[in-house]
Length: 92
Image (tube, rainbow, N blue to C red; front, side, top):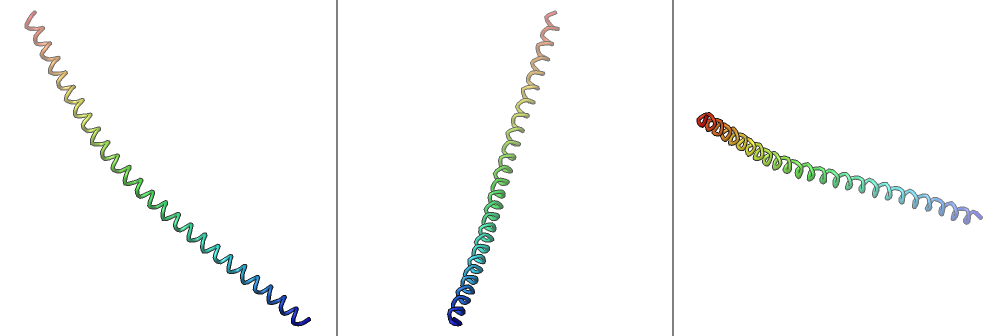
């Protein structure tokens, strides 16, 4: 009987050790997965920031070109208006 009890006790201890090892491994896997996930998220955020920053710079350049074009057209229109006004005054 003593031997049987020792075998049962040893089996319980072994089972507990196996459970603890499995829990440790699961915890380590979860920690590693969370760390990798965080690293990937950080990398994706850096990439997105870089792409959006480049896009902002390009859009700013294009907006500057559009404004200069509108200013030029506005100046041309003012010049054309001045010429037509001077023609009307000469004809009168």
